[in-house]
Image (cartoon, rainbow, N blue to C red; front, side):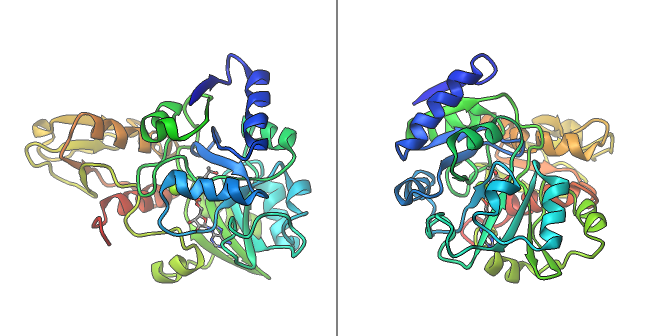
Length: 324
Ligand code: TXA
Ligand code: MG
């Protein structure tokens, strides 16, 4: 395994990553949401290696990352609504589930044999790499299955270490939670996973409401949405209004939490109660609390508005019973 800093050496990083990808191997790739474990989406062996490296129990479909609408339209069919959303929000934290073209060379293992394909265009270095490589990159988050998603290169190194050929380091991810996944079916929109793009922004551009499938239904639509996910070693509870002795506290804003003085450690996702900042800090804070050996993490209430929807979704999964 090698770790390469993109900030110091962008062109070397691009070249090295293309070599690794062309050999059917994987790179840990920074995106604006989280670090991804990326492989050539058209190469069945590379895609299989993604599942094996993560230890994913089932072949859930993966998001295929595109350099833009131009590349994406060789793989999926855009209607006017999908095109409008892509034109407005790409590059960025929005994944669209669209009908897969029968002539798309994306390997069926990447789409789990479904008739649809999840596509997104990431910003920054990831985008440059896809453009230069020329094929879409399949990339789930670069963590072992069920664990917290990585927002820094060091998180990937700690979790996957030797299992990945190359880790590209571009510093902390700016968004901090995974992309919002929306299925476009004619003029119907369904929110399959809340994420780094607020549902409100999508609704106002689309001029229509997002269907919110019940959790069971969403699990069938987005089979990767297991209930227990993002699990830290510690147990985690949400909406804590008081602290039991021995717990670590993850606070939000200036809201008082009763007994906070008993907490073994106090973190704050955002002192200003800014949900964007809180999303960016979420996974790193959970990992830090884990590293200091907190047996129980209590998280203060987070509002359900804007990015709070994605933050609370991830917290609910982290707090869910483990072998559900
Ligand atoms: O921000 C992100 O989206 C990150 C970065 C690396 O881009 N990627 C990511 O990928 O979170 P992953 O594989 O962890 O999540 C993919 C989700 C899964 O829940 C899967 O079930 C769903 O997308 N999905 C993929 N293809 C689908 C499809 N055709 N229909 C419905 N859901 C799909
Ligand atoms: Mg993931």
